[in-house]
Each structure stands twice: as structure tokens, then as C-alpha cells.
Length: 520
Image (cartoon, rainbow, N blue to C red; front, side):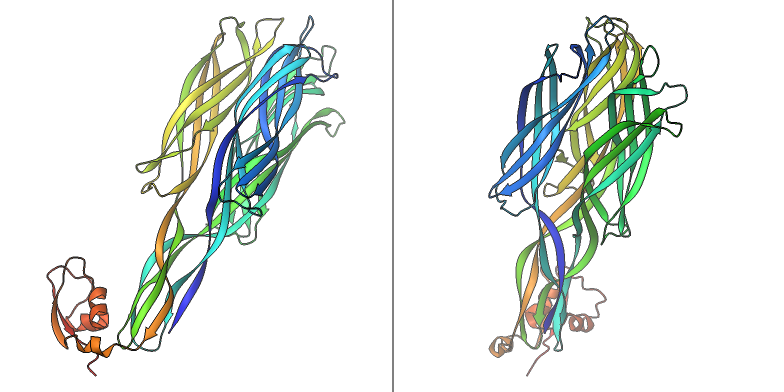
């Protein structure tokens, strides 16, 4: 008698922790940059350079990267840009991790405040949230069948699992050349650039992963000509491609996160030798997890009819895919300028980031709430200060529908903006409309007893002789045909045949004729 086993490859969280770090520094404006009179616009991001795991700790080294647009001093102020970074080195307590473990770190820039100390110095303050998660891969050997020659009864239990097929990191490169329309002047100098990815989607294919989305690019640049006017150009282009991935197959559940690893933007000449092309090269750092959904019938019980057969079992943890789902919610609000600001003349550019809190499991769903942080660059009616911006935050709350979700489930959420529309109502107010998309992958976790071994011994003849050769058994609450057969060492098929049964279903009070299978 031999167990037929199947090896199941799964992953689980070994340790996780969250923390916040505050960065504060005064940054001198580079000597090559003009003096500043007013801050206009800012943007920040975090670059992680090293993640090191030691016993019960994860050390994260990286830097805050910032861009600041400001107006120069003088009679005719023009926009200029200052870039810089502030390093950080943070040790985070994560119980249970050890040297050699892998860990992923997600960051969120919760606040960035830039101030102008004087015409040559900026103050930078930032609040960064870091979330560390260490996952481990493990194998669970599970009995799925029983090879036997002598008569034996066994039963199986269905089990849905999410088997880990691929776990790796990779990169995806995006290269685009954006040529200016004919009615725009040539590029003398790029003053400000904003390049972001939107509506990014991943899909598992045979031997590769499909990547597609939109690249949104915004530029302020100094145009050729006697006046060297600052021009504004914005466009959105689709991108797509694939990443080779051994073991990947169509229909697998893809759990893929990405961050922008590097971003290079420069002005280039077109075929006529005129500087009219914005060349963009982005690198997406991908964290790839692929799961294959599988339905197993695992061995859950066994008993003998000619010999004493006992199953040795142990509890094991299994992970199943409950849902891959997405939903959208709309927000609408208005942003007003401060009373001291000059009226708006024209909106030049708007951008927004979704800051979502950790989701909360509710009945048949996940409650997601957070804010959409908006920043709009505009032309002002004040000729001495022709450029300005307004910031605002709009809260949102949404329940993503996930039927049958329970407190023991785990999930990962991705949020982003699918649409952003900002219109000027008048010189002092903006109308804001946006669509937030929420995606989630949800796993359920179950503990099941799995059979690890079979112990076979001779029947206890004294015990067997104590059982009646024939008996009328009256079923009680909770009884099953399996329980009755195991008690009297009788095959289930024999009980069904003796009692003219077509199914194994019995109800309390049913009378079953049991004829002992072994009399010698």
C-alpha cells in the first residue's frame, strides 16, 4: 500500500512591517541656476538603492528625488528648474526575517513641502511611508491517491490552490520620440518635464508577459527666436510590449508591481537637423508573481476491511485564489485660489496622485479610502508673476466588490487614475473630475489535515469478533456512510448494494442493514 504524492509550490508572508521617515534639509540652488523669486511647482519621488535583510531587521537605503520649478528674479521673470536629492538610511524591525531572506519595499511620498528661504536656498521637508514585506517560498507534499492491492476504503476532499509558478524581478524599457507639431517653435532648452505612466496593465501569455499602457508627457521649453518664449507642449501616447518569462502561460493569475527605475529625457534633432524631438527612455522595474489555479482532490481518510489501516496526518496551510477584480469610482470637487493670488488666465497642466490607505475587509468587499492629491500649473494675470500653481486634496471612499471574502483572506490593492479632467470655471476656481480605478488580487488561506503516511496492521480478531455478524444500524445526527462502514469494517459499496442505495446520503433515523464483511 503506497501513497501517491503531489508537490505543491506556494508562497507565504514571513514578516512585514511599516514605518514613516521624515526628511528635512536646506538645499542651495546650483551656481549655474538663476536666482529664485517665487516657487511655482514641485514634484517628488523615492529611489530605493539597497534593501538588506539581517536578523529581525531590514535596512533600506535610498534617496528622495525632487524637482522644483521657480520664477527667476528680474523685470521679466521666467520659469527655471532645480533638481536634487536627499539620501536616507533606515533600519526597520521585521520580526522573523533572517539574513539571506528576500524583502520587497513599497514607498509612498505622503507629503512634500518646499519653501524658499532666500533667492539661493530652498527648504525641503518630506514624509515617506515605507512598507516592508518578506515572502518565502515553500513546498507542501500532499497525498492525492492511494495505490493498493488489498481491499481498502479511502476518500478524497476537493481543494482549490494557487500554486506559485514564477517569482522574479525584471525590467521593461520604453523608448519614445515625440516630435513637435509644425506650429511649435524649435527647442532651445527644456525648462521642465513631466513624464508619467497611466493605465498600465499586465497579462500573462505563453512564455511572456504583455505590458501596455499610456505615456503622458508634459514639457515647458524655451523656443527658438528673438523673444525665446517659453512654450508648453503636452501629449499622451500608448505603449506596449512583452517581457520574456519562462514558465508563464495564458490564463495564469498575474500579481505584478512596478516602479520607474530610471527616466531620461532629452531634446534631439529631427531628420532636417532641427531640434524638434523629445526623446524619452524609461525603465520599469517589475516585481513579478505568477500563480496557476489548480483543483486538487487530496486524500482525507482511509480505513481497512481486511486489515487495520490508519492514516497518519498533519495540519498544512494552503493558499487559494479567491478573486481578481477591479472597480472604478468617480470624484468631483472644486479648487479655489487663495484670496491673495492673481486670477488665472489659462490652465497649462494638471497632475494627480492617488494616496490610498490599507484596505479593510468588510462584508463581501474591501473598503478602500484615501485622497487624490492634485496640482495645477496655470498662467496668471499678474505680468510680474506670470506662472503659478494651486494644490488641493479630494478624499474618496469606495467598496470594491469581492463576494465571499472573509477575515482570514489576504489581498493586494493597486490604485490609479483612469481619467483626470480639470477645467477653469473662472479666474479663481477650478472644476475637478476624476475616475479612480482600484484593482485587487485576493487570496484565501485554509488549514487542512493532509495524510503523510499509512500504517497497516493485522486486524484485532477479538475486536472484530465482538461486532455482530448482522445488524440494523439506525443513523444518528452527523453520521455518514463512511463513519458506518469504518465502524463495522465494511466497504461502502457493500452497504449501498445491501440497502439498494444509489447515493451515499443518509439522514437521521434511516435504518441500514449491515452485514459484516469478514466472518473468519
